[in-house]
Image (tube, rainbow, N blue to C red; front, side, top):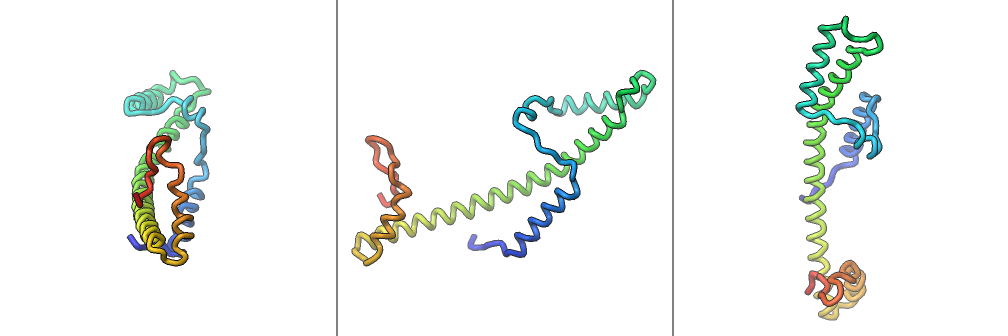
Amino acid sequence: MNITATTTQITAVKTALQTINTNLPFLTGLTIEERIALPAIDVNNKAFTEDAIHAGVNNVQLIPSYVSVPSIQNDMTLFTQLDEIIILVKQLLEKLEDTQLLAGSEAYTSALALYKLFSSAADAGVPGADAIHNQLKQRFAGQGGPGKPATDPNS
């Protein structure tokens, strides 16, 4: 990849994300337990919910005064609005994660190549290479378990 984001780009993205948070101040966080306990809406539940709302709107005389059909409609509208935003955010997150994976993979692969170069230099007796090689080889110390060779890429 051999690219980096500029400070201006990172600042602009952080500002844009803060703008999203500012524009959606009602966003909330849930605990794992709360997420598990809440009934989730799926395709079937969404159709049922929409049908129940339509029935409530068209049969107001059957709804007790303590039940607010407009509030239920608002919840459903927000669900639908957020669904559209979530799809866009997931697409962006996938691209961010894929780019991060690629950059990290390239950096690690290049680091392994450097390690091999320092190892070769140490083997050849180049002054100072032993110290670098010894520092870097700590990454592979203890790998392989009993009776198995370590997975040192120089092997």
